[in-house]
Each structure stands twice: as C-alpha cells, then as structure tokens.
Length: 371
Ligand SMILES: *Cc1c(COP(=O)(O)O)cnc(C)c1O
Image (tube, rainbow, N blue to C red; front, side, top):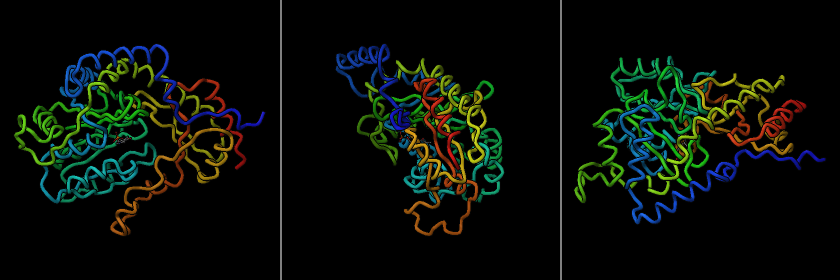
C-alpha cells in the first residue's frame, strides 16, 4: 500500500462536531432561532457566567473574536499615548497587532527556549520608563512563567494582559489561564481547545472597572444607548448562536484537553530520532493546543511528513519583529531564541479526535525519516 493512501489530517473539525454533540448543537441552535433574539441575550449572559466560573474570574465578557479581545482589553487599561507594551515576538502578531491598533509600541522580549513563552529575565531587562503593560501569551497550550513575570510587572507598576487563545483550561496550583493577570483574552476560533462554529472571543477579569469598560467598548463605547463615552469603542459582540454552541461544548473541554495530553505524551515517548527534538510530556499546566517539535532540518522533515500523508504546519514562520509591515524598524533588534524557533519549529497533528492508530502513524513516520 503506498504510504500516501493513509492520511492523517492536521485538523478535522467535522469529527468533533458530529454525532450526539452535533445533535445537541442542532437543538440549541433551534432554541436560538425560535427565541427571536440574536445579539447580547440570555445565551451570552449564561455563557459569560459559566466561562468566568470555569476560569476562576469574576467576569467574562463575550466579544467578536480573540483579536478584538486583545485590542479591547488593552484599550480598557486606559494607558497614556506613547506607551510601550512588552510582548513576545513568536505568537503570529496577534498581540502586536492589538498593540499597534491602540497606538502603542511593541517592545519585543525574547522567549525561554524550553517553553517558547516570554523569558522573565529578558522581560525585566526590557522595561523602560515608557513601558506600561505586558502581554503574556500562553503559547501552544503551555502556561507561561506568569508568576515571576507578574511579580516583575507589579514591582514596576505595569498592567498584565494574558493571551489565553491557546490555553483554555491550563492550570497551575489552583489557578487557571485567564485568572493570573489584570485582564485576559480568549479566542473561540473553531480550531482552539474550545471552538465555536465561527468566530468568537472573550475577555476575563476580576476587576469590576475593567469589566465594565470592556462591556462598553464592545458596544460602540456606549455608556447607555446612543451615548458614546469611550474612545476605541466598536461593535464586537459574541452572538447568541455561538454562545449557545459554546455552552454545549464548555463542559467537554477538560476531557478533550486530557485526550490532547495523552496524544502529546505518546508523541513525546514514541518519537526517537537524532534530528528531531520532541518536547517533554505535558503536565496540567499544558493543554496541548499544538504539538511542536524542533529540527535543524525542519523543511526536510516537513517535506518527508507531507509525503508520508501527515498534515503538518509551522507555528510560526516569521517572528513579529521581522514582519514586512515593520520594514527595517527592528533591523538591529536580535531575539535569537525566537528567531531560531521560527526556523526549526514544526507542528504535528494534535487534536482530541485523532485515533490511536493515527497517532502511531505519525510517530512511525517521524522515526522513519532518513535525515
Ligand atoms: C488564535 C489566536 C488569537 C486570535 O484569535 P482570533 O479569534 O483568530 O482573532 C490570538 N492569540 C493567539 C495566541 C491565538 O492563537
């Protein structure tokens, strides 16, 4: 049998959204249709309560997508013009775009080679008199070193924004992603660990004032109807249909995350190759959103796996400070760890509905690479 006849997809959303779960989603969709109320209603309110409880925060505010969550969270902090925001350069520009959209400047901070998340010491060294906040991205599902970063931020009076778009349910001690910072951002893009059937996002916080401001910002900056009191307001609302679907899925996330960890553990234990560096098996602080190996011959490995019928991807190929929009603005900025990771990282299929047989196929294909 030619190897290409047995394909392992990088993602297969139709597998999750099928069977009994699809039936229940159809039922709640019907409920929303029949309700005659489609924006900011009972489903969104109930989801916001349930999601805040899940994250261990006082508030969750549903918004249009994860990028808007970042942009509105930053806007809610009411930082002065010209503020610099510390951010890691290896998370596909999401946070950086939100910083730029608010008129702030990114201050790129290199990452820790082990977890690929912001390096606490590099963060401390990067702080200038204009630094006002830090965005901490929990990348690939791994909680960042948020405790030391938060301690440094508090010493300097900086606000802490978490980007949890890849880390729904990741926990350390008794705290979950989204409950460490002043404010946090989630995406419910369909491939995330909690995914809608379209775009969606949320902001979590336990600060009443910030929650109130984000609620205003997502609805034109209104204080009350047609009374605009906040700049940076816009229309960015989670809709009733997505909220109802997310309510069906939320109780299942921990189970899916556990299955993702089992898959990641099998990869970590099974991949034995001199030219592939596999990450250690994930603990509770890692929800295995992506399974990312490293290789000095990444492009050859990618080609080999694609030829073997394995879906792969690169997260992410261009560090933020090397993105074309910046021209040579950051030409003299060198962030060696992030730059090295962009050249060597390769993501293998990692989603809860992969079969054990598919996982074994991926392991065998890696080990059969003749590098
Ligand atoms: C997906 C993602 C976002 C953006 O979310 P959207 O809903 O696609 O706008 C932001 N940050 C990270 C780390 C992400 O993975």
